[in-house]
Image (cartoon, rainbow over all chains, first blue to last red):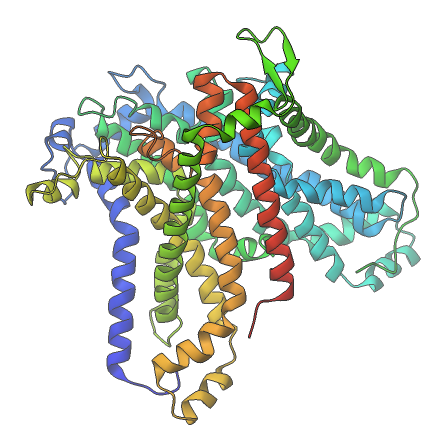
Length: 282
Length: 293
């Protein structure tokens, strides 16, 4: 800072602390609610300190499921979420890195066309074409399958653009040197480009894992069986009654479990996360 | 930008592109063209036959008061969310940009809600403001304020806006902080030497230099409100009460699924596509050029 005024720092701390409070409070409340019994939560006078029912609530949420809603236990939904989030992240990285490699390191007819075909899909989020895409997936017999949850979401322009951008910064001399050493396209990709791309891959993985985990509309549409739903879609169904009869303490335990993996990714891989976020938006 | 060194294989580049292009055609271009085609058709109730009706779906759409209501809701919703989340995030980012010892810790605490799914964020906020049991709703009602987002459309919209803003602050914060940190300190020092106080320096130096970030975030936020808030709306209000929180995207979903009006829903999808394409085009035109004074 240019001038140092102690009160300036105090104001900054006060505003930031308020910010953290606003950001944390809804989650704190969910955490608290997941440790009380149903009556305490529904009674409306829930204390702001933890209760003693956490083990029971989490056990029931994960392994048993709600009693009034006869829904799947959350453990199963967590598995579905993990499979689809990892599938989406890995699939996206796989097809993006290959197509970026083709577009950057080869000269062939229709190269520009291929690039534009990929690029234009930036403008077609799932939301604007939900029913026709649903019909395609149902015609392909992929409703209620992991393929149906994953494949339509792995095609995105962002991954290809990100890898293209990174490949452009790789010095040409590396390719020339590999060629002198007799390396073909496969060798160069495997031994030179892929190791150099590690950080980019990791950053993209972090962002895409969160993206995949947090999907809502698409899994909601294409899963008809409870056994295939993801945790983010399942939690809403616990509350469809939206009255006092909903088992809020279980719903809140589910919410906490649904937040845990992506939040852990952001907190523990913060540098990769920030990098991925900033770079995919360029 | 082109590479000067490259491979000359004839077949390989196509093979590398196959997985990407197959997915694009099957799940993007084919459905998008279907949406366009369906928007000119009328299907009978069983989906057995369809006839070409030209622009009738669009005429019906633009004659429907509900559609204008959804448009208005979308505009109000986007404006509120973008304005609030951008200004709150900017306030926090300017504070975190100061030379504080604990700034990195605050940064971590500010950014993690990015990872919370919109639908989960919605559930957290309805829990706080559920009229009969919500921890924050009860004091409101105890003070005699008849807070009820389940019945009152304005309250429902306020609740959805709060949840959407809460979720978006972290993203805006991160980009504002990066933008602030890229402003050269020498410019600010020059302002200080000329006798400008902190407020003056912010509005005449920092804020204008931040305009590329602000503009970029504005577009991103509008796109966010259009699409990503679907989960929040569905979890908090389900588009209700009486359509008060039905945005254009929510209406595509609701009309196609519950109403079964595929032609009308397709026409709405096409309108949305046009809006997204316009937004993306604006973003690329201006972000590339870097808005600055």
